[in-house]
Length: 259
Length: 333
Image (cartoon, rainbow over all chains, first blue to last red; front, side, top):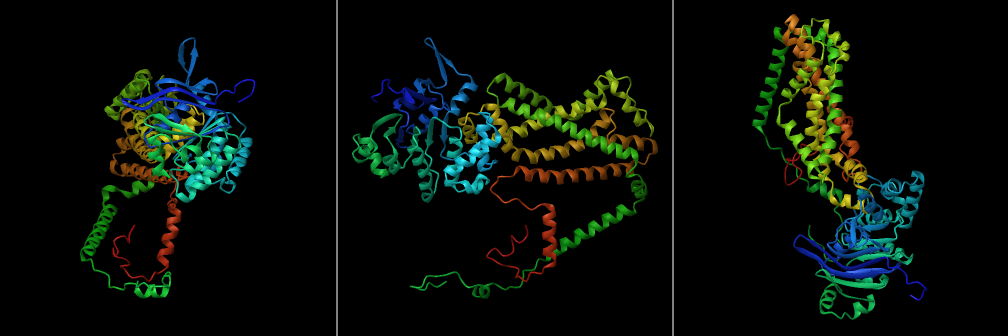
């Protein structure tokens, strides 16, 4: 970071706190993700990984702390020392700039692969239909699914569905991609094809936050690895070093079970 | 199968499998035979009685099936059903979305509406509408001989003409039922779908229109078909409450004059059966349309099924009755 201006972090979290009723899920998370960085989050279930991801595109509202994406507060606008909740439309617009990939794919079952990919560019961005269709085909080709362009999701394997889901998110030309355990619902033999697409995406310079149990992916692709448990970031560092030599006892426990 | 160590076991030859097939004499079911004969006897007896009973007067029925008044009644009934269902579906969708609103007043208002219209008989509601139509109208003719029905075309000048009153009466009531059906449909669409739509930047309204409702249709269509068929029959109440000449109204007016009650009611019944049958048929194809993208292969259409039946009937299959451990239990679909 030797430029004249320090680059602005793509995601910045300061003491992010979130609870569902009495259940405290995030207890003060601090994080900075720079543009082009791939941050991998690992940790036990219920540790708050997914919730943190969902806070970033405001699918969940945080109760305390601050969260910025590309320098702008998530879900709020600050005027003086007061926070104003953003209207639905602006929240929607902000979300359109952040891609999200879910564990259960969540493709729209009543649309073909191409329609899934083009629906948001057309309906949200007002892109021309034929142009969006063409672009959808190109993106599907990029994830290796040109042959399945006119197929409904029910006829696709899990790996193919997840690749369509990635294509759908990419069609909005996001500046940040969030992956919520993208391979956890897949048969072991299908995991590779999804990880390959993600690896390529990372190489193309996309900023990514990936919640996963794929330590191999974290080691090879990740720029930073976070271990999250009980609502806090227990340990973070360079993936290779951290996997090889975890410092914290809790991390050691977890990694010994996963590896 | 005895494992042959060393040589990998392959799929059994078709011949050897056929050799192992069970060939048994089918179990007898004497009680089924008795019941079958009894049912056939009763059916024949009923048809015989219906044909020979002079009170039914089939001559009157067949002569008047396509009488001008009857046909006009049929058309009016269909028109009334269509309009009322349009009002019901639009209103029902609106109410369903309102009920799911996070704003208490809005969801509460929808709840009260549904509570009121589901909680009072539609007949009573129609009587209200009828009295309003009668109040503001010039004078609603009850005294109609066979020719008098034409008069109602002239009543457009009324503030609430009978058709409007009937459509409002039926449609507003239907809206309450449709609201629950649409709501069930909306709730049947998983949360992951709305989240995916939201993450793509869709607003609530767009998510509803593009993602949720099209999927909810699969759940909404079958009961809506039932509602439509129910509506078709409920329109017969209009004749007794609002002077709008739908089928039942026409028929009652006719037999009020000629006293041929049973045959004219038969005419109406036959027409209702025809109309509901056509609707059932149509519903089937609408359901297929909204099932697209589903994991299951679609069931065959009636026409396809008919062809399959034809082929089955004329191709004799030589197969033993019991083909598995469960015997013939699942033989019939």
